[in-house]
Length: 87
Length: 202
Ligand SMILES: [Zn+2]
Image 1 (cartoon, rainbow over the protein chains, first blue to last red):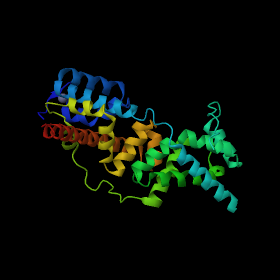
Image 2 (cartoon, each protein chain N blue to C red):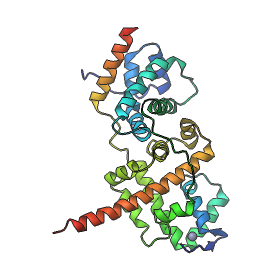
Image 3 (tube, chains in turn purple, orange):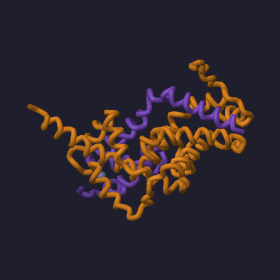
Image 4 (cartoon, each protein chain N blue to C red):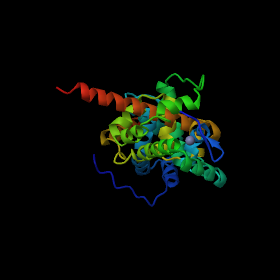
């Protein structure tokens, strides 16, 4: 990776802040500097874009798996019965 | 017995906990229905797929027994996940390798495809759920936990930090490194898949 300084930021500094940037954890001035860097640095722009897409896919991944096997739940409730009857 | 009624979403988690503390089984069942998937995912991350179900069972039994001690101002999901994590450790805790030597971030970046000619590989691989699952499973428990809490469950940074018992600053650092390692793993899997499909050609 050839380090370039764009908008007063080196590529490694952009890399270090990428998750904070994607998660909206940075202040307005930091966001502006990173976005200026991305505009002037195709390497960081490409990596940042794809890294961001990966995070979006990860965040969507639990879809359709919101309920667990009903047998598991039944087993849990049976165990609970045993536990409460012991008391 | 499959007479479980549909979840009444107008009842808050807090109210369900309060009713559970009074011995209301229906309320407890609803709590299980709402949170079992999240507890199971964290249990898988913190222990092992083979023991995750066991951890989930024990977690909810603890929840039933400890419902009266729940602080009303806390988030139920954060509380449940904290119990799940503690249970995973108690039962099947993996050896923790608490950041012995931190790899330089730029090194993690390079492995993840930073500065490479195909950074697209990670985004393409991440669209396949099977690849995402395998890449996740290849990571350490620490990495899996932080990704599960923050990205799969969508907890806020402060909530995830509370579950893991670390500072918000440490949480952010751990999350970023875990995402880079996930990207690196997706890259490797992508390459393996390509080689496998080339090798599999007649
Ligand atoms: Zn750059």
